[in-house]
Image 1 (cartoon, rainbow over the protein chains, first blue to last red):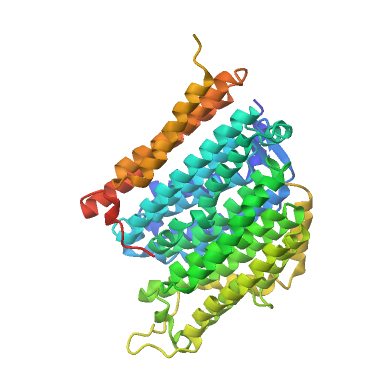
Image 2 (image 1 turned 90 degrees about the vertical axis):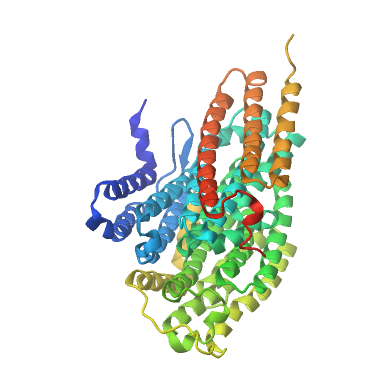
Length: 478
Length: 103
């Protein structure tokens, strides 16, 4: 066996090294070194991000089981940036008494899920893809239930685990039919074998695979776990789940649809059309009536997943570029919102929307960050969210989905209403008598992460070189 | 006499949808877990049968099944750990008691 093949897996190997170092510090370090674990994790992960920032060349290893392309490598960098922001935001949280004993586990499980997502993004065989999918979702259930004594945390963990296993069983059944139809599990060979072999079983396969991935992405008929899990999980885990897990699943779904089912896009485009309309509309309508901010962001992220799917349905290199760009902008906007929520929860324990009344008078900086995040999520022009929505609509229009884009545009207006409700609560409503959120100074990790997020929201849209760079990479092929 | 392939597929399909039915109707978390196992194992049977009858020249389906069994075991272990934690708090494993968060 040629061991130099492992060099192709540069990103995976450096992530594994970071994981092992943190594991060693956690296991053998004394009480003193445990205190520095959170900073060490941030530094090590930052080095890993920088080490992998140059996209890899297209290559494959292990007989085509592992395939890397520049755009997949770029997606890994985007996921790295998001994870780094989450790690910065969780520095003060891991020192709270509930989590203190298990902070090592928090970092280890987080990195293992990221490793699974890496495998999903750059797999060329369904076995590696399935292992990656499970590696990404099983430790996530343990992460959600990490607050052992908190009722909501373990309830959310149980709900997530049962729906995740149910969805992977559906996915597995779809794969078994695909194997029966095509006789192989390599992405490239399947595409060749099913080109001349259109059976009803193939359509059933596509339906099962879409259902299985739809659970991970929380598309609408499969979204029922989302709100409960987002509310019950610790806020840091929720933010990780809402951006990193969703972004990687979106790219992985695109990988399957483009590589395996690329020859008959009409079949899956019909299903996706209905899923997108349902996802965007129902996500928006349910978001309006939420009073808990974490539940509110859960429904907002459901409708954002619908927008992300617009890039997939386009079925072109332009759609691929728009999807990755959307995920990057979504990471910055959503993590800014979650950063504000988690530092307010850390200092006052409040997550209701009514608790935010008059926040501007006590904590003006946090209010402005939250406002920028909401504007970017809604897609108001000078901010990055507008440009990401614009590019993703343009790619869908380019492939001829006029009515779909019209529905999505109308939904953008609905979403503006509920995003502005938060801004109204902070800036216009009068503060509550006697129980307003007191003025506080958030910890340094959160401040750094919020500054990074705000810089991303303000600059990403204006710096057009970013989108141009993404286009260059995606034209090189998936 | 060789058993036809369709017989195996009928068994695996019945197993799968019995699992779906059980997952939806059962109120006990352990019973739900067993239903999930039924679903996963039905898919494994499919893999093995397709490999044995349609593509006997390679062992791709068999290997996939081995990995899938390993992953199913990991899932069960994690689910049992969470269920035990729930049992310690509310002294039973009925899903109707996990209703703190709702629409």
